[in-house]
Image (cartoon, rainbow, N blue to C red; front, side, top):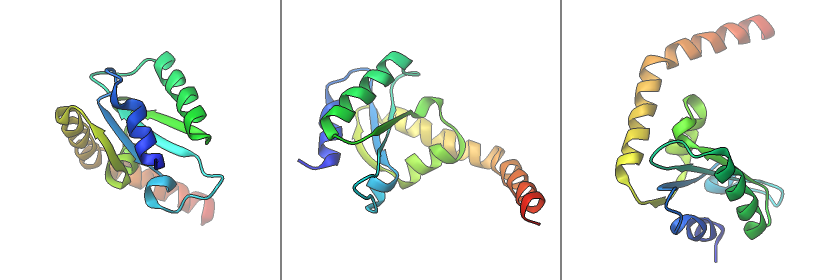
Length: 129
């Protein structure tokens, strides 16, 4: 069974998780033997820390690789964009949640991205000349 399939099977019967996306090097196909596994999840609302830690420990044991789990409902900016735009959708039990996250990403990019880009440009100029 592939890594993607193992992640999908792990979350399939967990009612608190409606959306699962594999992102990062594993999704891009450029992972090495030491690469971690980046998994973004979302439910009807924010997932509590206890569940996120439990998922992390259990999935790390199953995959035998370090796992980073991200709650998309609590994410914004670049990390949200990386997961939604560059990730592999593994499980989508509630398309409405996925649509809301994409809408959140679009609003974030439209409203805040110009400010974010300007701040980064100023920092680059200050530090690198």
